[in-house]
Length: 169
Image (cartoon, rainbow, N blue to C red; front, side):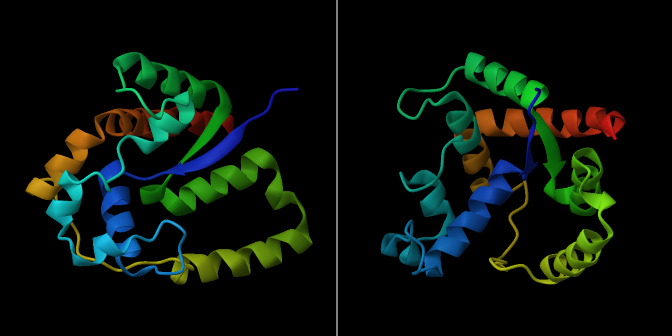
């Protein structure tokens, strides 16, 4: 039996920026660190607190050593063979794809509750965190992109794979 996981991808820098602002005030989170509350985003980007290629490290189980190109290639192959990809910037389209692929849309009673839940989540969400946007022209963006080079490359691949996987449904 073939198994397929599904996940949403978000640009690694956008994810890191959001995580920084969220963890500045999320005292209830186990990963909360009081040191972040006094940092600027640039200080965070240069610090040991900033995430570094979290997705590729998780997929390859390499949390200690420096990453190499082969780690990215292994991660791409895992995605290609095992994961139905969603892209946060195409959230609605991704959700519909998941529903069709996994057959979630077929039960009428399921549809009503899912639609209600989707509307609520898309309108607000539980951990929505409004914060300043960081454009690619900023030093903060560049430092975080360099630090997360492998995740950035994997994200670009995930966007390509998302287009290719349209034929699955």
